[in-house]
Image (cartoon, rainbow, N blue to C red; front, side, top):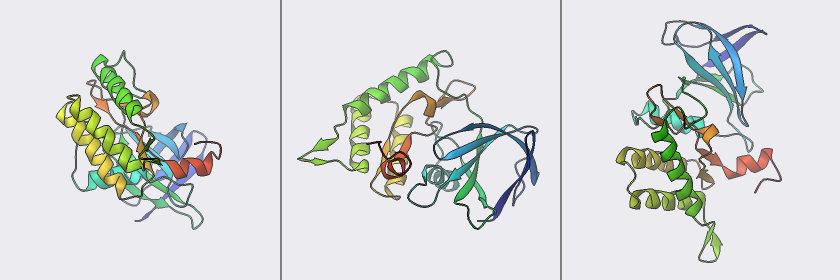
Length: 218
């Protein structure tokens, strides 16, 4: 993957891309709009609205959830419930573990006022996830085992086929990255489109990566 450079400071920040963006630009004016546990978030200032994330990905304290979403996008595994994440390039420094991704802008966080239907789906997912036990048969369940149990719950409860398929895609892809990925459904990690459709924006987490940056977390 080719390299990306972040140039400038303050309000004059340019993201220099290895390949033209959808508007045909290599230099894209951006502004910082947020920060999460593993990513810094930028938004384009001109042209087509997009979000760029600078994501710490490698090593024990990195997270691969953006990569697995971009892998799904690259393979054409498109779902109206999943964000379309595109891998842009690695950070242009030998000491960096950051990878850059691009996605459309969604309405974040999920709010009932933006879409009562999406909010009801969130409550449904939250309830199903809460019903999945941490242990079974005298041992802790692995992440992919808990994800499968959640899939069984939402399927049995009659969730929309498209939502079940999106969750199945995420669970299947996450299993390729190890046994510690699991679902979580806080409203801050979910979104809606302008039309009010639910987006499972960032509903996977790697237990070991979270422990690495938050040692008291269990």
